[in-house]
Length: 127
Figure 1 (cartoon, rainbow, N blue to C red):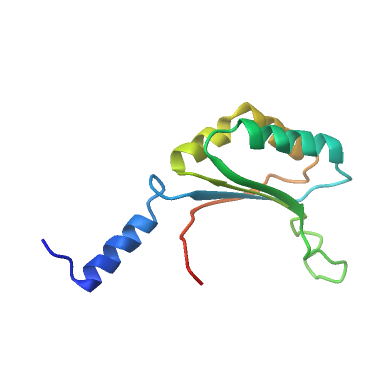
Figure 2 (cartoon, rainbow, N blue to C red; figure 1 turned 135 degrees about the horizontal axis):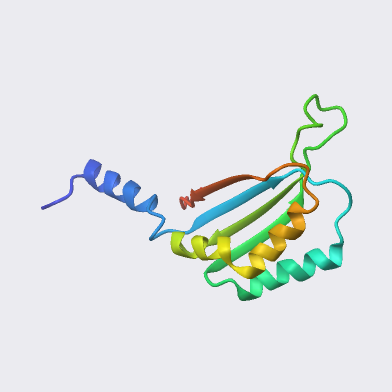
């Protein structure tokens, strides 16, 4: 069976959204209170980076959008933890890995509310 250009595009689109084949991203948005212990945070992040299988990248940072003049600043998330994994299988492993659990326990001990989490298939683009 030959693929027409529209079928080929449709098949490529389907494959690009397959979490078993493509990298997947996990983003946790947090509202944290009080200062973080930077050395403890660095230690926990390093442990995740060096021990979690299938982890491609890991980033943590404070939001640049929080401002006192913003009408919803009292409800805004203050930090985000972003990770990218080789595929959905590795994301599942990450979520229960002891190093990730230790990091999240530390962050949630300073959280005002549960994290807002978004998981998605990374669709590559050539912009």
